[in-house]
Image (tube, rainbow, N blue to C red; front, side, top):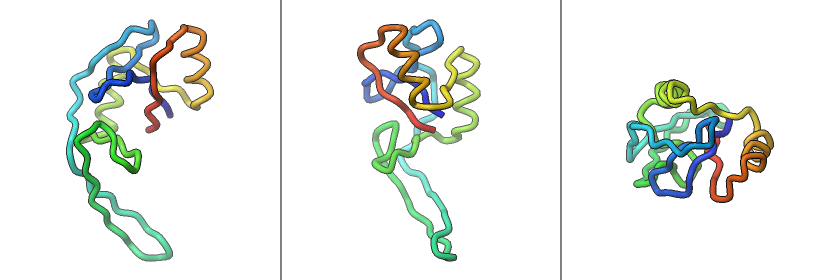
Length: 101
């Protein structure tokens, strides 16, 4: 899923009325991810002073909780990047980025 966000270092999110909203999200500077590759467990420590890591991980304490908070603010994700792009085009948003979750 995709959210439309501003270009700011601490992004604002676009709601369905195309208003920019800055939610109070709990951003973190490090994140531990564990995954399986070739039948082996790997753990990596990601860090970033931005809202997103260089590996495109959203740097929030609890993504599920953050998404719920966004929904309460009438900020809804798009299923595909194409849907988000079409919404931006229809609403003449000229400065935005995509946040893939």
